[in-house]
Amino acid sequence: MGSNNIFVGRKKEIDILQKALASAEAEMVAVIGRRRVGKTFLIKSVYQDQIQFQMTGIQNATSERQLENFAYRLSLLKEREEPLKTPQNWFRGFTMLIDYLRELDLKEKYVVFFDEVPWMATHKSDFLQGLSFFWNSWAVDQNIVVVICGSAASWMVQKVVNHTGGLHNRITRRINLRPFTLSETEEYFQSRNISLNRNHIIHIYMALGGIPHYLKEVEAGKSATQNINDICFAEGGLLRDEFSKLYPALFEKSENHISVIRALATKRQGMSRLEIITKSGLKNGGTLTKVLQELEQSGFISAYYAYGKKKRNRLYRLTDEYSLFYLHFIEKNIYEGNDTWQQLSQTQSYKIWSGYTFESICIKHLEQIKKALSIGGVYSISSSFFKKGTEESPGAQIDLVLDRKDQVINLFEIKFYEKEFVMTRSYADSLLTKKQVFQETVNSNKLILWTFISPFGIKQNSHSLSIIDKVLTLDSLFDS
Image (cartoon, rainbow, N blue to C red):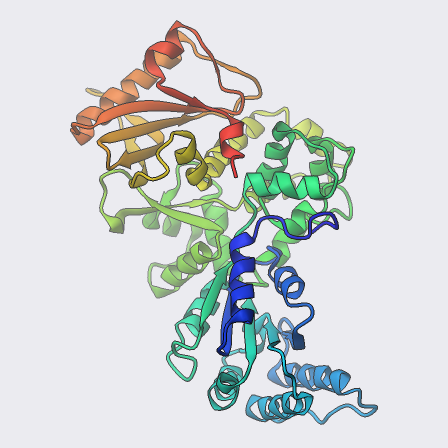
């Protein structure tokens, strides 16, 4: 992640790994996080001197091929001229691993690392039974840390963390590795000696998200526009065809997941379950429930509630920046040649996309927003608000509502604008109407305040001063 500062962010995760190594007991650590988020890098960097065995699953390989890979890895460590015989099953494989580790006679605590476990533990293999045997019959009494890692977050939670067999309650520590925040992204670029101001960083983040492997492609001396063009549109650009690999690497029957992602990309306000069914063509039932759950746990979509609605009326929105960017721009313009993004960033489609994406990024940085409002310690519930207008009364849509326990409700207007926003009389009137509709609908006695979020803030005038209670800028979102 950069030679000057190997660890950017990840302080909490590093602490978890170090505590596992320092403890007096055997530890089993589950590390979960989407493809390219930096799981393997984190583990190998923290445990580089302690790893005594490491194996990475092979995507779409048979159980026999995975076992061949296991035997090969063990042969390399044993420095044998002839490779070890491939074990017939994982039970035998783990007995071979036990024999190898016993021979080492290590005094210090050491690490065994299984990467991309979902690729090894297919439903036809006995990998999880073998791992259960390894842990329960031997490792639990050793001076060892067993790390199991996987990109398929939902699979890891269901099959490993919530395992009902021999691994039940055996996970001692769990890490859910998230993409970088804006602050961590800025720190990451600084660690690589890439000089970009926050305006350029937010543009890159809107297209690539906070995925370290994607951000690694950003080059010094180029603008956000140039970098996005090179990474996403130029021939050989890393993200030109990443979408086609992303979901199949994480999910079985990934065409269902892609159908949901494509459906959600078409509506800014998010969709109900019924709307997803209609748009995606998927049937209602357990399969759709599983797909939505897997996408949410992996961080591609977010589920939220409209203000005052029951929990079963959840709305879903696509919040993975790269997927949204790909479907809006890359897929349709992949063969347009040089300077594609320079041209696309001047279109109306860009304005619509940037507004939606900036809104999603703000919602993801709610912790920073609450800190900027000096309410970090105040319990609050976030939601959205929507009321359809009729001939008799106007409707209203509010991007974000923060209902606080200190008798205040913050209404947020989130606006992506390339310079200081100038509020007109008509814009101020529309916000006043929204507030009135909200007040009449929810009938709350709480103090209701308008908070305006825009990259460069608002140019104060009589209209803004009469309606906006607090203005936040990009700097608030970059708070660490």
